[in-house]
Image (cartoon, rainbow, N blue to C red; front, side):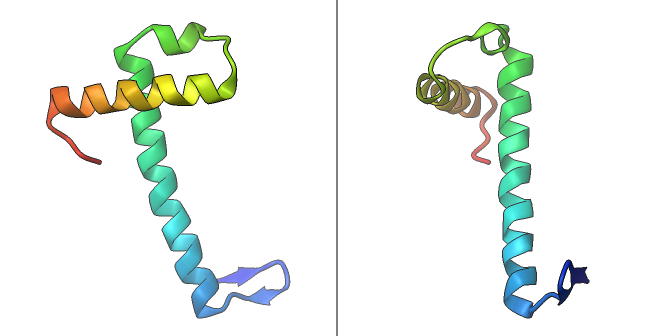
Length: 69
């Protein structure tokens, strides 16, 4: 695999793999929150408040579906 300036180092590849994993978890959580509740689609609040609301909704969804990630 090569980056803009040549081949990636082993640590760069490991970091990219880590980011892909985290992104996947976040996208799955976002999908669950948005498809389960209509409220997040119409929110026009401060981003930090939206984050707290989404985190709370995610915890509730995890409890409801018995999932942790």
